[in-house]
Image (cartoon, rainbow, N blue to C red; front, side, top):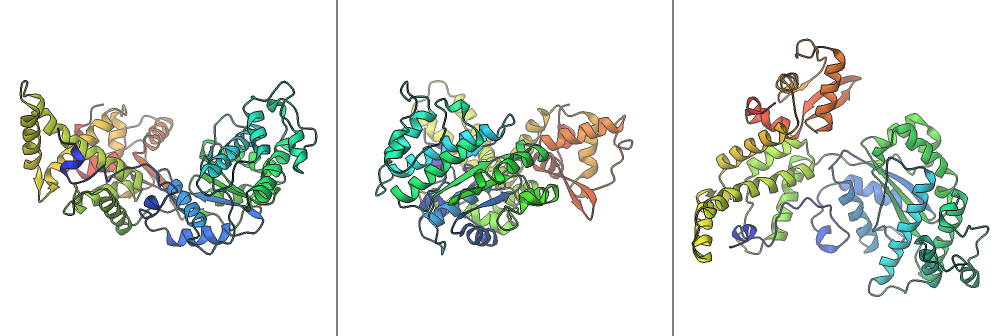
Length: 450
């Protein structure tokens, strides 16, 4: 049977939500963020390395942004004079982390990044001393531990490095990262390397501050390492308010990735359409009107728009596949004809008819929200907020028996990304997100099972 996206004239889905990678094709898909890009590149262009903070809400595009900036630097598409080895493999934060576990993973991932760099055509071979370090990190050294003598042979000596990697102290990791940096400069003709510590929102602010303070005068003090700390919206402001000693070590005032504008989102989708099409007359499977509904629901978060648009097309394809499944003994040719015929009835000039898209989007919202185990009070809260913003919510009028139950309901909706809170002039505001917004917009909120 003809592949779904081929029917629409595409080689693959144009609604791929995967973050952009460091390559030419993905670079051409990057949209907007001009001010943030200028800030990143100017702050990054420090001769001895630096610490940057990149922050923004979930799904806002932080990974795509950073990968694109690294590609710009690596391919000399900017005026940045520094050329560290890029960070292909990030170090994601984990709730159980302490300073030592992060430092160990940073070293492990840095060695992997340098290995990937050295495998690329035209780059120098991986130096022997880094091979020895990689063996030590992976516990594959001989009985005498890592052959640290080879490091001395090349002019890179260790002082008091333990044989067992698990016994290494923060000072040891400082020395090891210093050695790796020197190898990059002397053996690989690069200015150092980049480290990305990702998803730091898994930490409480106080715990994150303790980790960053432990790095402040140790790992962050090593020249020619470019550190990028990635986390929740307003991360720099929160760190600055918590402890200025940390924010003073960070270059600039943080780079906040905002939601896309409506025009930027439409441009992003159009770029992906052009990149995925294998027929000149292929057009957006969904109309701009449907994209606008998804944009409004997401508040400008690209990941939700792309993921929901893709799921919407798959649901519509399911309708055609259901008709095909009822033909038990038909030949493949007949099955393909039936599939195309049913799908064709749902199209209007090669786009899915808006009425069908909206119906399926409403059903998708019902399906998703019904899985969240919402209660009557939660539904009342969603309906009360509606398509506007709200403040000064009263738990009594919303059907909650107590303020604690109200707060638990709010927290549940926030965790499910049905509700968003923000402050304006010290006043807490509430607004619906994603499927909560769509359920109200499409008037299906009363059809949700609870």
